[in-house]
Length: 401
Image 1 (tube, rainbow, N blue to C red):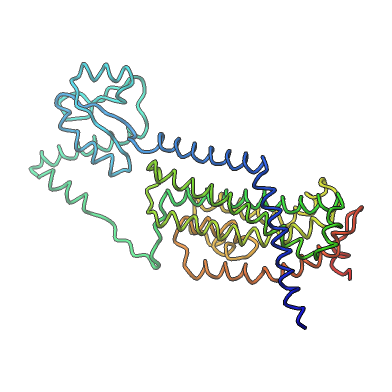
Image 2 (image 1 turned 90 degrees about the vertical axis):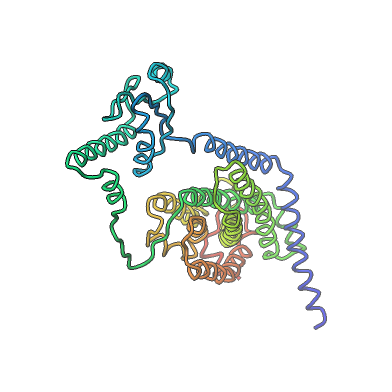
């Protein structure tokens, strides 16, 4: 009876030794260093590109002579229809020269009573729309003045007239940056599950084909070897995920590309880590068990493709539906299903607006599934990992003693 506690300590020590071996080997590998460095460079490069292309104005318009009086109305009109226009007061000759060399997108000339615009060749459609709206307002003001009314007062009343909207449920205002972060979160989770999950299966097959597994199983149990491998590779993936996610958020906040609060950014990284751990642990147990069915690296794809399709399907649904419809009901339901939650839920959480009960339920369901996966995968792994040669049928691995 007194030997039971010692066995249990030895069990977890064995798992720790296997996990430590995987961590040391993979952290020092060139593949890990190159992959992490390349991803960081791409992410930081993307952030810098967004810094240069975002912000600024949609157009720069010069105003000259009597059209100077249109400077404020032009900006107000552009803002009202969702555009940003910078203006610059210049004399007409200098303005024409700046339009010709590209410093100005357009130049307003004339006495300001109507819109007369000078461009080099063609006018941008968005700018044309803004100027047309302003021209209509000027014409309306003139008609009001001719009838003895006050154009300023009429404009004020028109601007203040808005439709009263009464939603049955309060809508969630999705921020554009949150949508982008959600997409990036989905990509990181997808790539991590894809790469690290397959690494587990490849490691199992490598040890099985080289007969190393037979030496290892002479001193430790099959479930210890399987669990140690999953934990070790999971830690390496977690380090990679934390470094990439943290660096991306830091770069975004430092360059001003991200203007969301620091707490929201930290929350995104935390949820990213949580869902990576849950998703990786669940899927890697399955990958390890299925990898034990084959003895050749070229056969891995055939056995892990079925569960891998759920990872791919969840990712594809997320990036194809959420950007245009963040509140989609199908995605909302699937994000709480354990098979799809690891890819869909972190994307929804990064976008915001997810009720706490939905996030909690998704976590609980995945956590509840893991013990069953540990038992099932452990059984398959134990019965198949020492059987080399032809592929072991799943049915045989499940019922072997």
